[in-house]
Amino acid sequence: MEDNTPLYTIVLCMTWKKLTKSEITENGKKYLKKLLRQFNIQQIREGMEIAVSTIKEDTDGKYNTNDLERTFNMLGGICYNRSLNPLENKKLHLSNLIKKIHGNKETKLVEQVVNNLFIELSYISSNELQIEIVDKMIFPIVKDADDMLECLISVETFINEKLCK
Image (cartoon, rainbow, N blue to C red; front, side, top):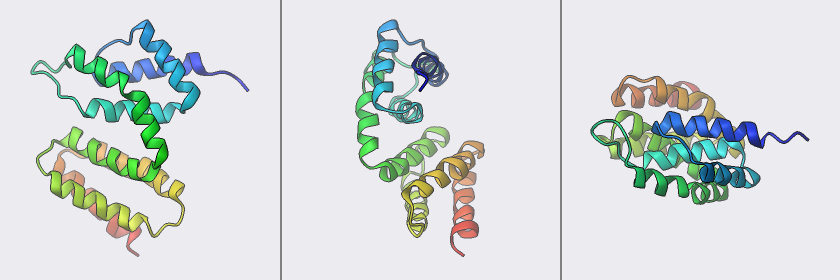
């Protein structure tokens, strides 16, 4: 089997730069290579998104260097915790993504819509299929919405049209 670690390390560095507008150090690249021995690239990318969603940008749209370093060092723990219960972590990731993209204004409403989605998804027996539906159908809805209201309405519409039949 081919070792894709060098390529995946580059992809992860690009992902981090896209999320934070900052470069990963050589020690950070070594840390990513270590993580790639334990987790797949998608788990680490999602871990990065979750980690970055926990910190606030400065007024000039940049992140504090200390916050970035602390957050980057949390990646291993995030990936490990997510591997223990992938479905519950997918739910948390979706909630955090909605709040990160569309703001924290309607936190209770976001939680309600996400919980409703996962209740309806629970009627699908396979956790892997539930996760695939969220990855391939729900995440694009969240990312394409112009604002929080449109996002939540679109997710509710998906639930009603695709899952509640």
